[in-house]
Each structure stands twice: as C-alpha cells, then as structure tokens.
Figure 1 (cartoon, rainbow, N blue to C red):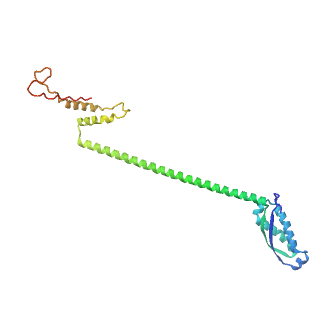
Figure 2: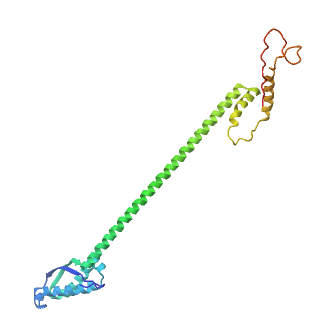
Figure 3: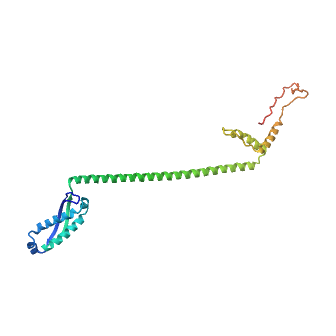
Length: 244
C-alpha cells in the first residue's frame, strides 16, 4: 500500500467471515474467497491512501472499522457475513524503520535528559530549602544567645549595683576605684578624650588632702631644713604623693 505521504507499507490482514447463503455464495460470485481478497486489497488502498504513515501506524481500529463496513456492504449479497477484520502487521520501509528507531532513541534520550534535569532541579530546591532552614535556625540560636548574654550582663550589673549600694561607699572609695580604672580607660589609640564627672574632682581633692597630711619631718632651730644634731640617725624623709 502507498500512504498519503508516498511511502510504501506492507499490511498483513486477517478476515473472519461466515457463509450465510450457500446458493448466493455459489451463483452470485465466481469465487467468493478471491472476491473477498480483491475487495479487501482495494478497500485498504483507498483507506491507506488517505492517511500518512504516522496516522496509519496509530489508527488500526479506525482502519479495521472502515474495512469491515465496506466488506459487509459488498459481501452481503454474496451470502457472506464478515465477522471480524484485523490488521496483523503494518511494516514501513527499512529506511523509515531506521529513522523511526533513531527518533525513538532521540525521544528516549530527551526524556532521560528531562528527568535528569528535573532531578537536579529538585535536588537544588531541597538543598536551598535546607540551607534556608539552617540559616533560620542559626539566626534564632544567635538571637537567643545574644538575649541570654544581655540578660546575664544585666543581672551582673544589677548584682554589682546592689552590692555597691549595700556597702554604702563614700566619695574617697569611689575616687580610688576610678583611679584604678584609669589605665583600662586609657587603653587603645582611639581614646583621645576622657569624661570625668565633676563629683570626682571634689572627691580627689579630699583624697589628696587626706594623703597630704603625712608631710616631711623637720628639726627645730635649723632654718635650712636640716635635722638637728641629736645623736640619732635622722628619720628617712617621706615623699609626698602627687596626684596627677
């Protein structure tokens, strides 16, 4: 058979029939078997000639129904009833078969590539989702840790403040503590300016006055500040502390 797109195909057909009128089958046609074969070939040529190769390969039910309709109408007056028509095989040319195999192989490769790409896509999505969840959990952990650190520092400040308040320190003690912290405040190149509360100045004056009471010992009758000769070793001179 020749298809609509001018390709030759070999079709193997099976027809199941039944003689319903022996007289008609004998006298209406010279040989009903040969007549059925010739009618089948002619009908198939007409049907296949209106289809391209792809439709021919995928429309077996349509071809069977069309062929059976034509045979029933023609063989009824011959005393023959066609029960069933089947296409056993439709074989395209060898070159077309090779092309079809290549096309099928290309389709399979295409589907495999699509499936692989889809798998990679799903993998990337899952990986990104996992990284997102990990980042969220990490941020939540850091936030909670920062909150706990801040709470701990606040508690420490409250504890120190309560201890200082319970001890009721005077200005001299606070001034001494401030002097102890001055080296730490001066650490770093960026510390160019110090903020000194005004109360510290008054406290430092009192602290300096208290420490200045321990002055040098001097002897009487010696205007030069030299100890008088008493027969004893002169007492060592005490250096007066200087408050910068």
